[in-house]
Length: 204
DNA sequence: GGAGCGATGTCCT
DNA sequence: GGACATCGCTCCG
Image (tube, rainbow, N blue to C red; front, side, top):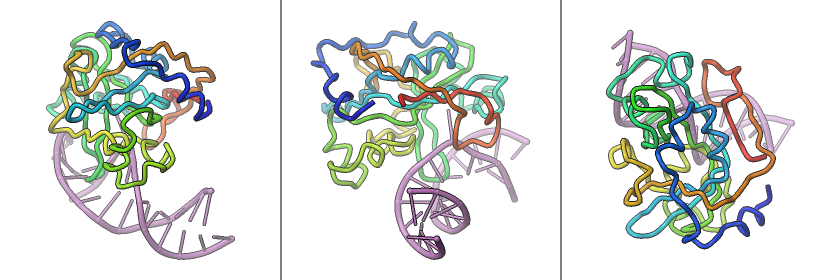
C-alpha cells in the first residue's frame, strides 16, 4: 500500500456511506479486518478530519484476558457490553486516550481498537493538535492509538459512549468503496496477556 | 535506528 | 497500591 494509492482512491465525500449498526453486530475478530480501508471521520467544529483505517486490533469478551471486558462489566468498560457501533474511549498510562468501537449485539462484550490511520483530510488541523508540521509522516501524525486521539481531539469525557452510526455523531466510519489488498493478521502488540492470538490486522 | 525508560491518571483489588 | 490495549526522549551504536 503506497501513499499515492491511499490518496488517489479517496473519492468525493458524497459517494461515501455511513456504516450501520449491523456492520458491527458480529464478533470483533470478524469485523476488525473488514474495517481496514474504511474512513474514520471526526467532525470538529464543522471541519471533517478524515483518516483511512490501516491498523486495528480485536478485543473479545470473557475468553480474552487482554481485553478490558474480560473482568466483567464495570463502569469503565460498560460501552463494550452495550449495542454495536458505539465509541469506547479510555485513558491509559496517565496521558493517552485510545479509541475503540463496540461490537456484537447489546449485552455481548467486544470491541475493536483503532491503532493507525492514514490522514486524508483535515491534515493541517491534525498536525496542529499533534504539535507537528503538516508535512510530518503519517506514522508520526496518526501512527498509534494515542496519536489518533491526539490528532482527532478525541477524549473520554467528550466521546466515550458516542454512537458512531449516527449521521449527527462527531465520530463516524464511512465506506467509500475502497478495497484494501494485502491484509495481514499478526499478534497484538503493547499487551502482556494473550499475546499469541492473531487479532491484529493491518494493511501491509 | 533501536532499546531502555520515565511520565502520569484512572480504575479495580 | 499496582497495573496499564502509550508515547517520545535519551543514549548508544
